[in-house]
Amino acid sequence: MSRLLVSALVAGALFGLGLAMSGMTDARIVLGFLDVAGAFDPTLMFVLAGAVATTALLFTPILRRGHPLFACAFQVSNLKHIDAPLLTGAALFGIGWGIAGYCPGPALAGLGAGSLESLWFVPAMLAGSLLHRLLFR
Image (cartoon, rainbow, N blue to C red; front, side, top):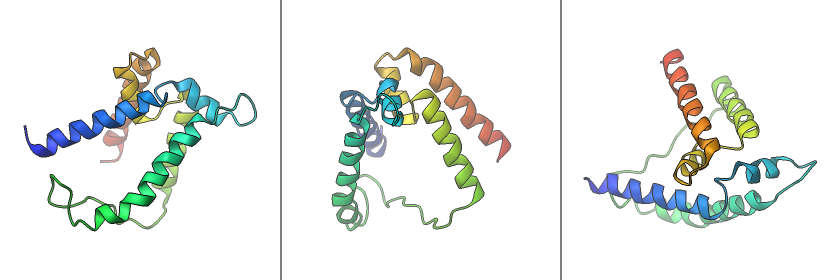
């Protein structure tokens, strides 16, 4: 197995472990965060703040390295414009997140944590991805 594949597996496992430890595999916590007029749960806000702080501190110094440890170059998007497909995709993502309480990372981590909701959400997410691929090739 290549070093790149192993590093991706380790990074994904670390990400999933962080999601599970922070409770983000529980859709009720995410839905509680989105319910600002009802039973608001600020837990997700603290997880997001930790992620933003880590990125703010480390993004630039890491990019200065020139390339990742196990790859030839960083893959950073150069897109700078906002268009209809971006806004439509963001809206659909947000609606799905608000209905289900899951986005892709926590849903996949939820599968590993034995979440029954993930068993329903992940196939629907994959079907939506496949539908997009078929319609917008």
